[in-house]
Figure 1 (cartoon, one colour):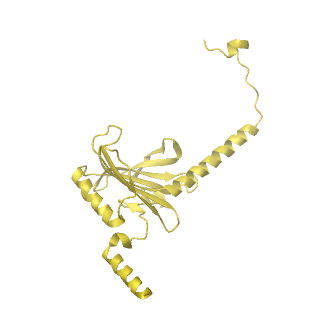
Figure 2 (cartoon, rainbow, N blue to C red):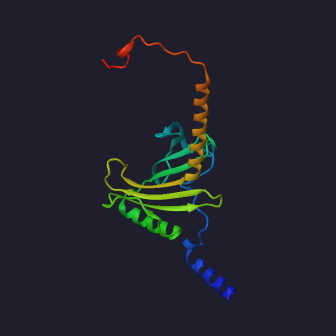
Figure 3 (cartoon, helix red, strand yellow):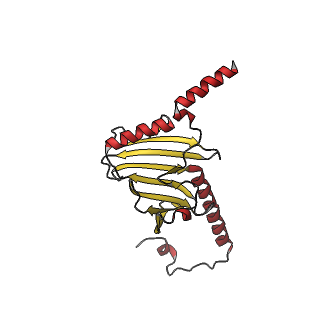
Length: 206
């Protein structure tokens, strides 16, 4: 009975590539999560590196022209594993809704049905998210998005592949370093600054 069950499952998996996929995705457009950004220096513009807003420990760089893509940003950590890629955001050269629909079909064939809808009810931003856990027990998220006309987002089709575990670890490392730095500042001997005003004039705006 066991042998027959295993045989049936094997045939099902062979007939359905999405079911057979056991490894979480870790690369897209030739860029690879958890690899050092230095390995891709010939494909990115390091002079464009800037901290991510509200996540200063993460830096992003723009990609050079890559066939099939209009633009892209590669994010890497600076604390826990400095330089290691934590997120890949790429915008496809084809911005049409038709291309998005074809791409969505291929995503579903490879990864199965999405886990979550991330767009808006009016489909101005149409986005789907897949969630994975890789062999290292790290959380991976994959988002495919089509933006029709939202002014807050760039129009077109985009893919975002993120290792959320690496981002969380880098943020925690950065937070601890910041706390240690602040504690060292507190322990220093500071002389109190004496303002020119006194009494109520010190507390009132004018």
